[in-house]
Image 1 (spheres, rainbow, N blue to C red):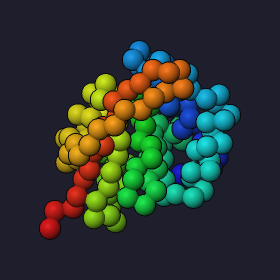
Image 2 (cartoon, rainbow, N blue to C red):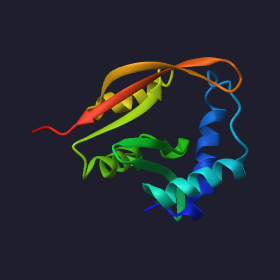
Image 3 (cartoon, helix red, strand yellow):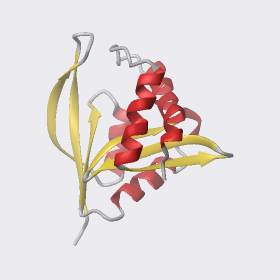
Image 4 (cartoon, one colour):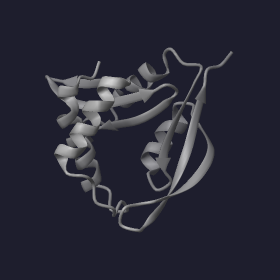
Length: 143
């Protein structure tokens, strides 16, 4: 389970992802602001971290049936970490929803592979005035 004390490490994973994502032009919050946000989420929602040698390498947070964040450190991708965290989020649900930007093809491909399907799209206006297409994906348990 994620603890509020994991929030700085989790926020750094997001910042590192932002650094490697050229199409995301809107500035992120400062690290301490972002860490406080995730610390609050970890206190109020179900959340999990993945660790390797005591280092946080990924996390997933779920509020009700919605995943509010699923991020994996660059050096931990393609090793089953994301799948393991997503499986935890799906474990006691009949369905879950997660949003990913249309341009985040790596995440969208992962969600498709894990059985999530696109159900809607929305335009998100970012703080710098730019906009991105945000895609809603849903997984439903087979009956």
